Image (cartoon, rainbow, N blue to C red; front, side, top):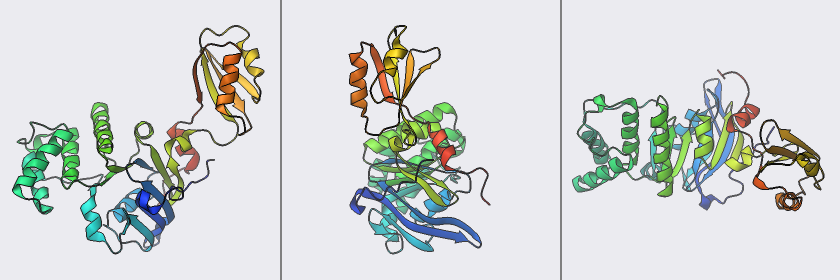
Length: 327
């Protein structure tokens, strides 16, 4: 099983948008969070993953200052959630899983209401609303009633509302919940564009396949504790047991398997049935991939692909979490 890795360690506090240290929280006898520690670097698109009851929503509510921590510390861009609530709220946008909307307002009226709540002038609100509607691909829908929109369109309006105050950090709880595949893909494209614009995005989701493609870092939690926090690459590369390289070749000769077994540092080689691919296993961390690749080229094979074999996010998730729902 992959050992937990704290993302706080490799980064200084100045590099982090979110810093969580020894965070604990309970509801009566239920311990929702237990000494939780992790960090999210500035500019990251960070996945937050865990089974039902793992403490994800509680953590989000603490980070966005809707709950006060009972023990431990949370900082957002260096400010403590205990002492700097107003400063933090100016810099974050929170989109809950179950959001309520003023359905009899038009899209423009809905966004204008929240812009006024943030203290923006009429001129500022008009410009901001045009910008966020363009960003969320809702141009031309400003006069539509919220009640007339599909679930996917309402999700976009909710995201536009989160962007009205131009937050540095977006906290999104299951933003793709209930969306059809096309709407989910389009939402993920919007989130990638927001990251390119410099936003830090912290996204809680159960759609593991999309997080694997979308996020550059991830935190996996289970029963209120952190099981892994770090880069997506660090999680998905098989880092326990033998290292495995996947080699794809063009028109492999009949003796390709024998040739591969003679490569220095490789303990075993398996052919992938029905495909011109081979799995090379090595027990030693001292053997470097460039050394293996040089030997592959040296034995005359036409290499078309060479990479370290990786787990899927759902495999890592199952390895790190326990069965059942915590009550």
